[in-house]
Length: 267
Image 1 (cartoon, helix red, strand yellow):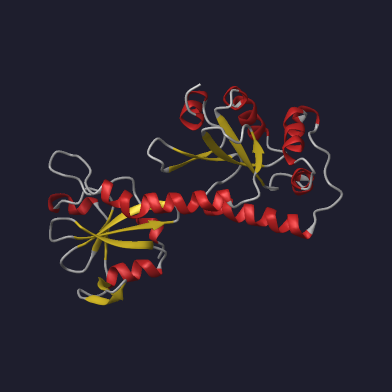
Image 2 (spheres, rainbow, N blue to C red; image 1 turned 30 degrees about the horizontal axis):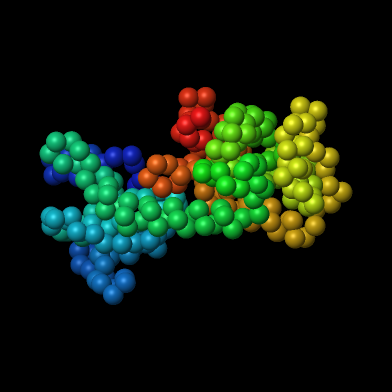
Protein backbone atom coordinates (compact mmCIF):
# COMPACT_ATOMS: atom_id res chain seq x y z
CA UNK A 1 0.00 0.00 0.00
CA UNK A 2 1.18 3.53 -0.70
CA UNK A 3 -0.02 6.62 1.14
CA UNK A 4 -0.35 8.38 -2.24
CA UNK A 5 -3.40 6.32 -3.19
CA UNK A 6 -5.33 8.09 -0.45
CA UNK A 7 -4.47 11.64 -1.53
CA UNK A 8 -7.42 13.40 -3.12
CA UNK A 9 -8.05 17.13 -3.48
CA UNK A 10 -10.99 17.31 -1.07
CA UNK A 11 -12.79 14.79 1.10
CA UNK A 12 -15.95 15.58 3.04
CA UNK A 13 -15.70 14.12 6.54
CA UNK A 14 -19.31 14.03 7.72
CA UNK A 15 -21.24 10.90 8.71
CA UNK A 16 -23.92 11.23 6.03
CA UNK A 17 -21.28 11.16 3.33
CA UNK A 18 -18.96 8.58 4.84
CA UNK A 19 -19.18 6.47 1.68
CA UNK A 20 -17.67 9.34 -0.29
CA UNK A 21 -14.35 9.23 1.54
CA UNK A 22 -11.54 6.74 1.92
CA UNK A 23 -11.61 4.97 5.29
CA UNK A 24 -8.33 3.29 6.09
CA UNK A 25 -8.47 0.26 8.36
CA UNK A 26 -5.84 0.11 11.05
CA UNK A 27 -6.19 -3.57 11.77
CA UNK A 28 -6.78 -2.61 15.40
CA UNK A 29 -9.20 -0.36 17.20
CA UNK A 30 -6.70 0.60 19.87
CA UNK A 31 -3.65 2.81 20.09
CA UNK A 32 -0.08 1.78 19.48
CA UNK A 33 3.26 2.91 20.81
CA UNK A 34 4.35 6.48 21.40
CA UNK A 35 5.47 8.87 18.67
CA UNK A 36 6.98 12.10 19.94
CA UNK A 37 6.15 11.02 23.49
CA UNK A 38 2.39 10.56 22.90
CA UNK A 39 0.26 7.55 22.16
CA UNK A 40 -0.41 7.45 18.42
CA UNK A 41 -3.14 5.31 16.84
CA UNK A 42 -2.03 2.17 15.03
CA UNK A 43 -3.43 3.42 11.74
CA UNK A 44 -1.28 6.55 11.92
CA UNK A 45 1.82 4.51 12.64
CA UNK A 46 0.94 2.18 9.78
CA UNK A 47 0.66 5.10 7.38
CA UNK A 48 3.94 6.50 8.69
CA UNK A 49 5.57 3.23 7.69
CA UNK A 50 4.02 3.65 4.22
CA UNK A 51 5.53 7.11 3.73
CA UNK A 52 3.58 9.62 5.81
CA UNK A 53 6.16 12.05 7.19
CA UNK A 54 6.44 15.07 9.50
CA UNK A 55 3.64 13.69 11.68
CA UNK A 56 2.10 16.28 14.01
CA UNK A 57 -1.13 15.94 16.05
CA UNK A 58 -3.62 18.79 16.25
CA UNK A 59 -6.86 19.46 18.09
CA UNK A 60 -10.00 19.26 15.95
CA UNK A 61 -12.39 20.32 18.71
CA UNK A 62 -14.32 17.09 18.11
CA UNK A 63 -13.96 13.40 18.92
CA UNK A 64 -11.84 13.08 15.78
CA UNK A 65 -8.09 12.98 16.38
CA UNK A 66 -6.31 15.13 13.85
CA UNK A 67 -2.81 14.63 12.46
CA UNK A 68 -0.97 16.72 9.89
CA UNK A 69 1.76 15.22 7.75
CA UNK A 70 3.33 15.18 4.33
CA UNK A 71 3.42 12.62 1.54
CA UNK A 72 6.18 13.55 -0.86
CA UNK A 73 5.78 17.31 -1.14
CA UNK A 74 2.04 17.31 -0.44
CA UNK A 75 0.67 18.34 2.96
CA UNK A 76 -2.22 16.22 4.16
CA UNK A 77 -4.62 16.01 7.08
CA UNK A 78 -5.49 12.69 8.64
CA UNK A 79 -8.48 12.11 10.93
CA UNK A 80 -8.73 9.06 13.19
CA UNK A 81 -12.25 7.87 14.04
CA UNK A 82 -13.40 6.27 17.26
CA UNK A 83 -13.22 2.76 15.77
CA UNK A 84 -9.53 3.14 14.88
CA UNK A 85 -10.00 3.73 11.17
CA UNK A 86 -8.89 6.96 9.55
CA UNK A 87 -9.89 9.40 6.83
CA UNK A 88 -7.37 11.31 4.72
CA UNK A 89 -8.50 14.60 3.23
CA UNK A 90 -10.04 17.98 3.97
CA UNK A 91 -12.68 18.40 6.67
CA UNK A 92 -15.61 20.58 5.58
CA UNK A 93 -17.94 22.54 7.89
CA UNK A 94 -21.73 22.83 7.64
CA UNK A 95 -21.38 25.82 5.31
CA UNK A 96 -19.14 23.96 2.88
CA UNK A 97 -15.93 25.67 3.96
CA UNK A 98 -12.69 23.76 4.58
CA UNK A 99 -11.49 23.38 8.14
CA UNK A 100 -8.03 22.95 9.67
CA UNK A 101 -6.13 24.40 6.70
CA UNK A 102 -4.35 26.97 8.89
CA UNK A 103 -3.43 24.32 11.44
CA UNK A 104 -1.97 22.03 8.78
CA UNK A 105 -0.10 24.94 7.21
CA UNK A 106 1.41 26.03 10.50
CA UNK A 107 2.43 22.49 11.40
CA UNK A 108 3.86 21.16 8.14
CA UNK A 109 3.51 23.43 5.10
CA UNK A 110 5.64 26.32 6.31
CA UNK A 111 8.41 24.16 7.84
CA UNK A 112 8.43 22.01 4.70
CA UNK A 113 8.76 25.13 2.53
CA UNK A 114 11.69 26.39 4.58
CA UNK A 115 13.46 23.03 4.36
CA UNK A 116 13.01 22.79 0.60
CA UNK A 117 14.10 26.38 0.05
CA UNK A 118 17.24 25.68 2.07
CA UNK A 119 18.02 22.65 -0.10
CA UNK A 120 17.65 24.73 -3.25
CA UNK A 121 19.85 27.47 -1.80
CA UNK A 122 22.54 24.88 -1.05
CA UNK A 123 22.57 23.55 -4.62
CA UNK A 124 25.20 24.64 -7.17
CA UNK A 125 22.85 27.13 -8.86
CA UNK A 126 23.99 29.61 -11.51
CA UNK A 127 23.07 33.23 -10.90
CA UNK A 128 21.11 35.08 -13.57
CA UNK A 129 20.19 38.59 -12.49
CA UNK A 130 20.90 41.10 -9.77
CA UNK A 131 22.11 39.56 -6.51
CA UNK A 132 19.98 42.11 -4.65
CA UNK A 133 16.79 41.42 -6.61
CA UNK A 134 13.79 41.27 -4.23
CA UNK A 135 12.48 38.03 -5.74
CA UNK A 136 14.36 34.75 -6.24
CA UNK A 137 13.11 32.04 -8.58
CA UNK A 138 14.80 28.66 -8.96
CA UNK A 139 14.58 26.81 -12.26
CA UNK A 140 15.87 23.34 -13.09
CA UNK A 141 17.52 23.86 -16.46
CA UNK A 142 18.81 21.38 -19.03
CA UNK A 143 21.08 23.13 -21.57
CA UNK A 144 19.20 21.38 -24.41
CA UNK A 145 15.70 22.20 -23.15
CA UNK A 146 13.78 24.51 -25.52
CA UNK A 147 11.19 25.30 -22.85
CA UNK A 148 13.95 26.31 -20.41
CA UNK A 149 15.18 28.70 -23.08
CA UNK A 150 11.67 30.06 -23.57
CA UNK A 151 11.30 30.65 -19.84
CA UNK A 152 14.70 32.37 -19.75
CA UNK A 153 13.62 34.66 -22.61
CA UNK A 154 10.19 35.35 -21.10
CA UNK A 155 11.78 36.33 -17.77
CA UNK A 156 14.10 38.95 -19.32
CA UNK A 157 11.86 41.98 -18.56
CA UNK A 158 11.83 41.08 -14.83
CA UNK A 159 15.50 40.10 -14.67
CA UNK A 160 16.74 43.08 -16.68
CA UNK A 161 14.72 45.44 -14.48
CA UNK A 162 16.42 44.05 -11.37
CA UNK A 163 13.18 42.65 -9.97
CA UNK A 164 14.00 38.94 -10.21
CA UNK A 165 17.09 36.84 -9.81
CA UNK A 166 16.83 33.49 -11.57
CA UNK A 167 18.88 30.69 -10.05
CA UNK A 168 19.46 27.96 -12.63
CA UNK A 169 19.93 24.50 -11.14
CA UNK A 170 21.62 22.70 -14.00
CA UNK A 171 20.73 19.12 -14.90
CA UNK A 172 21.65 16.90 -17.82
CA UNK A 173 18.67 14.71 -18.62
CA UNK A 174 17.33 15.42 -22.13
CA UNK A 175 20.02 14.46 -24.64
CA UNK A 176 23.26 12.52 -24.65
CA UNK A 177 25.33 15.71 -24.59
CA UNK A 178 23.22 17.44 -21.91
CA UNK A 179 25.60 16.41 -19.10
CA UNK A 180 28.67 17.68 -20.96
CA UNK A 181 26.90 20.94 -21.85
CA UNK A 182 25.87 21.36 -18.21
CA UNK A 183 29.48 20.61 -17.26
CA UNK A 184 30.67 23.33 -19.62
CA UNK A 185 28.50 25.81 -17.72
CA UNK A 186 29.24 24.55 -14.21
CA UNK A 187 32.95 24.26 -14.92
CA UNK A 188 33.33 27.69 -16.51
CA UNK A 189 35.38 30.42 -14.86
CA UNK A 190 32.30 32.66 -15.22
CA UNK A 191 29.29 30.38 -14.93
CA UNK A 192 26.79 33.19 -15.45
CA UNK A 193 28.46 34.21 -18.72
CA UNK A 194 28.50 30.56 -19.86
CA UNK A 195 24.81 30.17 -19.05
CA UNK A 196 23.89 33.35 -20.90
CA UNK A 197 25.94 32.24 -23.90
CA UNK A 198 24.01 28.99 -24.03
CA UNK A 199 20.64 30.75 -23.81
CA UNK A 200 21.47 33.51 -26.30
CA UNK A 201 22.92 31.04 -28.81
CA UNK A 202 20.38 28.31 -28.14
CA UNK A 203 18.97 28.42 -31.67
CA UNK A 204 22.39 27.69 -33.15
CA UNK A 205 23.32 24.90 -30.77
CA UNK A 206 24.17 26.74 -27.58
CA UNK A 207 27.31 26.18 -25.60
CA UNK A 208 29.92 23.70 -26.81
CA UNK A 209 29.97 20.54 -24.68
CA UNK A 210 32.86 20.03 -22.29
CA UNK A 211 35.31 17.29 -23.33
CA UNK A 212 34.26 15.29 -20.26
CA UNK A 213 32.38 15.53 -16.99
CA UNK A 214 34.64 15.70 -13.96
CA UNK A 215 33.79 13.50 -10.95
CA UNK A 216 32.93 16.60 -8.92
CA UNK A 217 30.51 17.96 -11.52
CA UNK A 218 29.04 14.47 -12.02
CA UNK A 219 28.21 14.40 -8.31
CA UNK A 220 26.66 17.87 -8.58
CA UNK A 221 24.49 16.86 -11.53
CA UNK A 222 23.34 13.73 -9.71
CA UNK A 223 22.49 15.75 -6.61
CA UNK A 224 20.49 18.16 -8.77
CA UNK A 225 18.69 15.26 -10.45
CA UNK A 226 17.76 13.82 -7.07
CA UNK A 227 16.54 17.20 -5.83
CA UNK A 228 14.48 17.58 -8.99
CA UNK A 229 12.90 14.17 -8.34
CA UNK A 230 12.27 15.06 -4.69
CA UNK A 231 10.36 18.12 -5.84
CA UNK A 232 8.36 15.80 -8.14
CA UNK A 233 9.28 17.51 -11.39
CA UNK A 234 8.70 15.31 -14.43
CA UNK A 235 10.86 17.37 -16.79
CA UNK A 236 12.43 20.75 -17.39
CA UNK A 237 12.01 23.51 -16.62
CA UNK A 238 10.98 22.81 -13.06
CA UNK A 239 10.30 26.20 -11.50
CA UNK A 240 10.15 26.96 -7.78
CA UNK A 241 9.13 30.26 -6.21
CA UNK A 242 7.59 31.63 -3.03
CA UNK A 243 4.03 32.93 -3.10
CA UNK A 244 2.81 35.94 -1.13
CA UNK A 245 2.48 33.82 2.03
CA UNK A 246 6.05 32.53 1.77
CA UNK A 247 4.96 29.00 0.85
CA UNK A 248 6.83 27.26 -1.94
CA UNK A 249 4.99 26.88 -5.22
CA UNK A 250 6.11 24.73 -8.12
CA UNK A 251 5.46 24.87 -11.86
CA UNK A 252 6.10 21.86 -14.08
CA UNK A 253 7.20 23.14 -17.49
CA UNK A 254 6.95 26.52 -19.17
CA UNK A 255 4.36 28.70 -17.41
CA UNK A 256 1.45 29.99 -19.43
CA UNK A 257 1.78 33.68 -20.36
CA UNK A 258 -1.00 34.60 -17.93
CA UNK A 259 0.82 32.74 -15.12
CA UNK A 260 4.17 34.45 -15.50
CA UNK A 261 3.22 37.26 -13.12
CA UNK A 262 2.44 34.73 -10.39
CA UNK A 263 5.92 33.23 -10.78
CA UNK A 264 7.93 36.41 -11.41
CA UNK A 265 5.84 39.03 -9.62
CA UNK A 266 4.46 42.32 -10.97
CA UNK A 267 6.33 43.94 -13.84
